[in-house]
Length: 146
Image 1 (cartoon, rainbow, N blue to C red):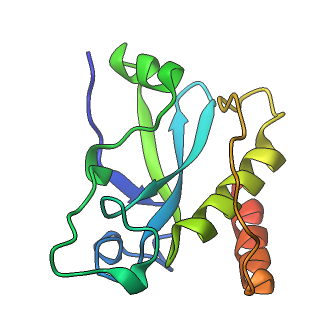
Image 2: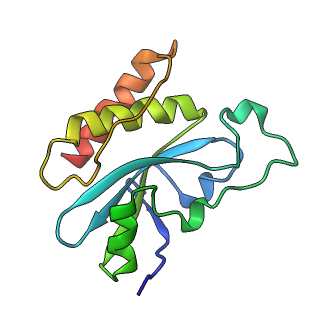
């Protein structure tokens, strides 16, 4: 039996859940953790079809992010079967491209770990000009998750 859980902030000292849909972020990177130690890394857009927060309009609609549990069939099957889990937002980004790059790097780094549930890395994104900023964010997240 599926139980939809609310999101938690992975680092509540730096992030507040109210910030997600504050109009400052387009996407976030998340991790879903199960009681058996397995986990899944993904990203989600905050608003429907919005890839850059600079293009937010008053008519832009929120996505289904509050109830989202990932695109993985196996992760959703585990949730549907009643396995206990927690959802954590790791970091919010102004653009979907930034979130995609960090998600891809995290899956690349943690993907070979036996507890990781990700099965693929599927991304095509240009590296942004703010590479050092994203590198530092990635480093921070990896240290927190390791």
